Length: 373
Ligand SMILES: Cc1ncc(COP(=O)(O)O)c(C=O)c1O
Image (cartoon, rainbow, N blue to C red):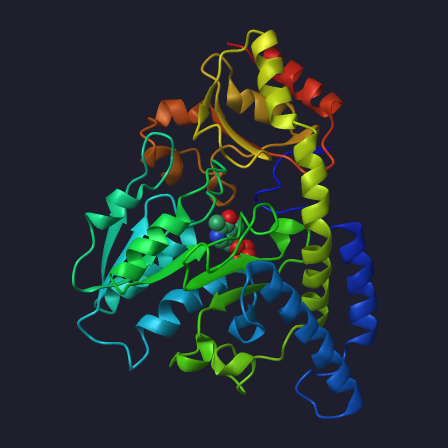
């Protein structure tokens, strides 16, 4: 099976599997327990906290472990905006039209709590332009949220510039880095972000673990999304998932190197060249500067439905986005780019693993050729 859906979830790295087996065996004590085994587990958890903080230029005290980017995004919005210290007149949120679906769900909930939500559209290349954010800012704007890398297009948003605008207007800036973490440089100061979300399973870590960075966390008054026994500085209740955190740590230390070797292979360009040589018409949704393990292609002369169905035992392919790929409707990202429902039917997202080979790409191109209309 050739797995072409790593943006939905990356296969567990062998190194992570080994560390998980070790951690489930040996890190069974509760990291909140004062005895020797509990202390040892706490040290392991805090080591990963330090490694993650180091990687993004943050302090360990600014990192909260969560169950993944969905929960991190919930904390980013709800823990701050629903806190009793949050000024009531700051009730406006700006999000981009190409965010992950969980951001829209959170905003729907917050609308019911009296918040107003503005949605900023991307340009034709799928990029959220800083000037479009400026035009939506009001005196009541409390939070802007724009994802770092889009999960369907791989496009990279100008986070640093948007963050600077937010800083100038005294607005909190959140960015969902589920797709960019481990694949591109992240420095929370350079990017001018106040809050950032991460997920382990997008970089070969286990599912069910992630993190949220909150600038100056200790100085903020935050409402927990999960109330508990004051774990994770009181922001996220529940026994800390130490074995998963150890696995996350291994992914943090392993994935970026193998991603760099993948980038050197130039696979994305190889695919585009082979499509051209095979005279298969295509257009790319997004732009050329997208992260190189991802491409959203519209193939107007290919029956994409048949391509996906007839090759389901050979390739794992995503038509639309992962969560909605079983619904035959244009994803909200493709719609925001201006694609019609028909054009969306001729579109699919490919996201490579680091182990992909040119032979795999050759098989894909010949399958596309066979599905010609
Ligand atoms: C951009 C983005 N945000 C959030 C998520 C949700 O992440 P998780 O599965 O860790 O909750 C995903 C993954 O589907 C994603 O791509």
